[in-house]
Image (cartoon, rainbow, N blue to C red; front, side, top):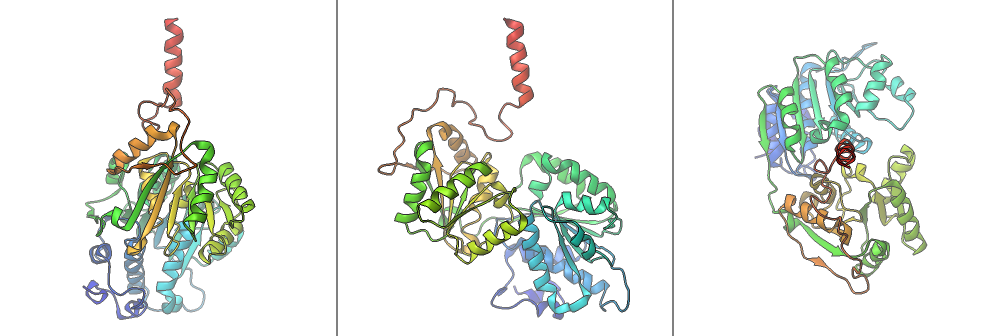
Length: 418
């Protein structure tokens, strides 16, 4: 099948450069005709399967059909399409894709990207006169809505990119406010790499008779991403990371850590060892984050230490290696982390550091991922710490650990029994 068979206009087909878009991916082949027909769609497909282009093409196509001529004189554009994303990096990435595909259309299609962490005033100025397609993070969208800089009552299509993340409790309050401002009759397009049971009922309540697409990886994940687990002590991880980078001659490494502090400390220690490394987390300015990513893509920086915000939306072409310095809180986050490598059929390597106190947690991640890896021991970095007696049970998988309220109830019960 080719893009010519999907109902796209000749003008839009010309934007699909053969070297970049030789043929539609499976998700694009199934998604585009259904989306053009106006039906709700719920897609679950692996990272790197072409989901962004899958929804960008029908959105631009429908816009050009309804607005075939560029506006003349003063004309306030009506916001027809809203794309919600969980992170700034994903907003920028989606914006680049949309603008690239619509660039040849001139003034027919205006795409605007907004996100937090930067001044709101330039974004408000950019929205004067309206826009056709708005790509936004939820918090900044509500800021603009409260300033009357954006009108949501004319939205015809709502896209949730990384829907699994946006439908989680952390975004629920913001999402509810946004949904209440949207027209009840609209097309909904939900896309994500994973589909946790925890979001199933909420998603189904927002969708109307959706066409459901589930795309499995054409090649089993282990054949594309080589997964390794190295068993070591917590105190030896930084030295182990230095050792792997130098002995394996790793040229570009994305390292995931649990906290901003860890990112800063480990990056500083790597720099002392002569390895170009930078931290990447939410407390950095937008300008600094963009500079780090630019340097990383150009390989001026060899190692980026990132918190989990980077597991969604980062698209580093041919990224060879991902390291879990700290294990992710959930098995779903493990999928997103290692999915930064091995994209578009390219080989990738994902290394996880497993320590005695996180061994039980790692076992649960393996169980949820349906993989079983041999925990390697490297000479000079063997684990000598004992496994803590308290390291029992579920190992801390997100959503299964006792909550703060559970702990308080247990404490109160113990006090009553005393």
